Each structure stands twice: as C-alpha cells, then as structure tokens.
Image (tube, rainbow, N blue to C red; front, top):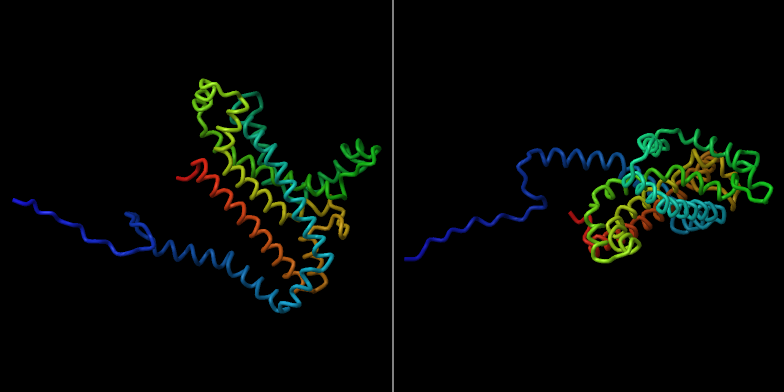
Length: 290
C-alpha cells in the first residue's frame, strides 16, 4: 500500500516576498513617486543641463584650474575631517556607552547640537574663536600658525558639523556588543588591546564606515558654517559650493551645474567604494548581515 503524496503547487516567480500585510502596490507606487520627485528628477535635470555644453565643453569647464582647486579643497578637507571624526567619534561613543558619570545626559545631548544649530551661527562662532585675535587663535598667532581663513579652519568646521553623524551611528551598535564577549576574550587569555582590535572593532567596522560616509558627505556639501572661517581665497581655501554660488551670481548657470555634476560623480564614486568595503566587512566578520 503506497502512501499518497501531495505536492503544493509551485508558486510563480515574483520580485517581492509574499506578505500578510496588504498595500504593497500602493506603498511601492508612493515610494517610487516620492523618490523620483525629490531625488531622481532633480539629479537628472542637473545632468541634462550640464550636458548642454557637449563633451568638449563639459571637460573644459570641469578641468578649469579654479574648479579643480575648489574641488581639491572640498574633498581633501572633508576626507581629513571625516577621518578625525571617526577616531574621536568612536572614543566619545565608547565613553557614553561604557561609563556612567555626572553630567553624562547633558554631554550626550550636546552631541546633537550641530544638528539644530544654524550653520551660519556655527561658522561665526568658530571664526570668532579661531581667528588670529580669537580666544584660541591668539594662542597660535605668535607661533605663526593661522587656523581661521586657511584649510585648517575648513577642517575644524567640518569636524564640528560631522561629529554627530559618527557618534550616533556607532553608539547603538556599541550598545549591542555584550560585555560577556569581552569577558570571554579575557578568560581565553587575550589582552585588552587584542580584545579591542579583534573583537570590538570588527563588530563596529560597518558602523564606523557608515559614520565616515555620512560625515564626509555632509562636509563636502557644507556651505554656511565654512564660508566665514575659510577665507575664500581661490586655489587656497575656496570650497566648491562657494564657487557654485559665485557662478550663479555671474549668471553662469551651466558652469554651476558642471561643478555640481562633478561633485555628484566624485561623491557617488567614493560612497560606492565605501559601500563595497562595508559589504566586505559584513561578509568577513558576519556582523550586520541580518
């Protein structure tokens, strides 16, 4: 006597996972529409406007000496500021998560201040402090070191606005790292340095890279908090967003869109590389793969 075997009908291919929650078509349509109106269409219009020069005209405008100088200032200073924020932002997140001390909640709230503070106010405050006659700038002026009105001032402004991105990205991941993992590592004979470099940091790598990418992107596109402390000297401390504004004042709209398009392409390329590193770190260490 053979047992009857029944087979469930094979489900056809679908680009979405079956869900008991209704409304996929409506929510997907709203998402695509909103995404197109807010992001895709403006970027497409930017590319079309800059393409009006033709390949030769676009290349000539993009490789102008002043344009290249402003792009170099923006991207180099943003990379330096993001790197500094990764180091000190990780330390700050560690202190906020691992230790309890008086005033911790106030200190934790102050981290978010650059989110709420108008960028122009931040720029004026930083300039007043780091100018040659400022509180901190006056200490370095006798040594011949200028902070404000130089690329160093730009880096400081970018550090100020980018720090919250790093801290708030790493902090929740660090809270999920159990103390038991560290205790087990110590029980197996690992030193504190080995525990940090082989247990803790690998688990934080995706979050650190995400914080770096966010701080870098914010720094590249920042305008208000930088123009006051930068000095805006062509080929020295002139940032690309400022040059875009100058081109618009000159009614050179195509030139402005060319600079914006180049910034978009460079930023996308760097963020794409960072995302590839993030994906590799998740596969390598097995964190954040859920």
